[in-house]
Image: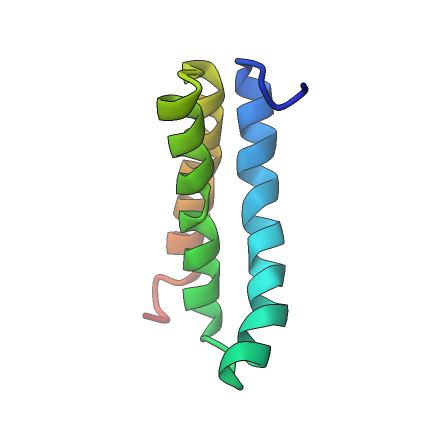
Amino acid sequence: MFFKKDSPLLGLLIGLFNPVVFYFLQDLVVPIILGSKFEIQSMQLFSIVANLIFFRYYIIKLKFEQTAKGVFFATFIYAVIWIYINKGNI
């Protein structure tokens, strides 16, 4: 299976793609359940934190360190961008 390889490129792709998908899922599902949206900064941060699910899966369950490093690197990139964008909005 494609997702069961120990590759930093795979981890980077998962780490970059997952927050985007999670953000749009929040944008669609949360208003249906709660009736209102979260603030944009919160939704962005929750999306970044969602990478921890994949990081934990690859580092602990599968013991694929290279893939986990790719996910971690993508998470770090998103976190730096989030801090830069929201430095005056918090």
